[in-house]
Image (cartoon, rainbow, N blue to C red; front, top):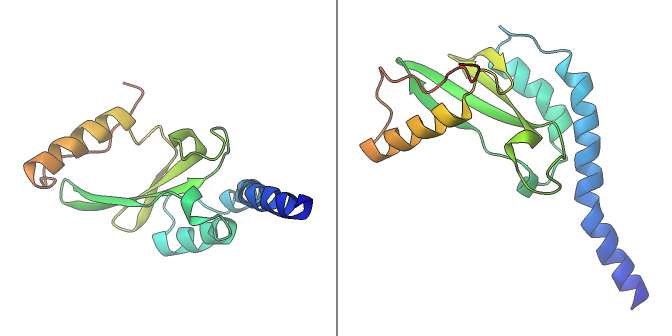
Length: 139
């Protein structure tokens, strides 16, 4: 019985240890990425640090049109501040416009503006081409 409890306990800790290693590995990978890099290059580089993270501890990418340009946001786990939850602060967004990296981090992606405009777009049946859903949180 004690062996079973120990195994269950170790399995429960494994995602945290694996995820912590991925967060540590990310620091090395991040230094190889620059604004203006191609999406394919950036995602390939980030994949090396993120591939071992369990699916439930990842966050899916998002995409939309902004002034007629394709925008994609890929979220990379860079912290474990919330424990095992998928809080915003545990991720760093990588924003691509037309397959080029234009921003890293939450400064460019306005959580409030993005969520409000995304909800508005969903209720209206989609994002209009003249609607920009990326903003600057510093305003």
